[in-house]
Image 1 (cartoon, rainbow, N blue to C red):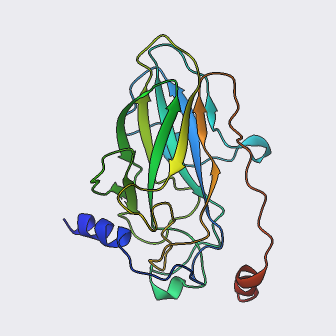
Image 2: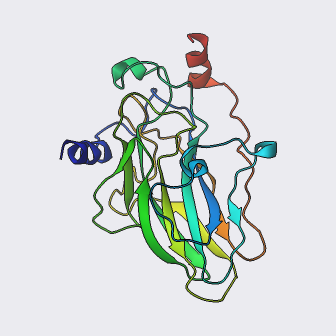
Length: 229
């Protein structure tokens, strides 16, 4: 119950639309991994632990086979230096994250959503609109989370013999109209500069762009924070 209340309170935080704390421009990425078996928990290690991809690319495309399954992984990146203190005001000048409200929109060839699973150290909160339109995931462990710790993953099923393209897009959480797609930083605030790094594609000819975002130049507030680290 305590974890549930924490998740709800994190999703409903009343903060300014613009804040000088936390991450300058964090980004949300989707990664896709085909599977012959239904996604479940625990997942293979590479699902919840982010590994570096050659050339800075992300694994946002997976080939599709008839009657197959997909692990759709949520990854948070482009974070400022992870806060070394307990989450709270002491983390104002640092990065890292504690949670994320978001939704997933599916288009193209149909795919059946099966479930959403938290990665170790995270919990999935309540959803009024239903998954995957409204998902909130938050840390249930100790300390600030860094970019190598993926928060959650979703399962999908190709219930046909088709192998055409299915597209998955990060969208705003249907339950949260104002901050529905914003990283929650370690100061318990939403990062208004949150971007979508890349969406994902399953099957068809690859059109999804999987390259990492170009690093943001250290200007304005980002540059000031770096001066004191």
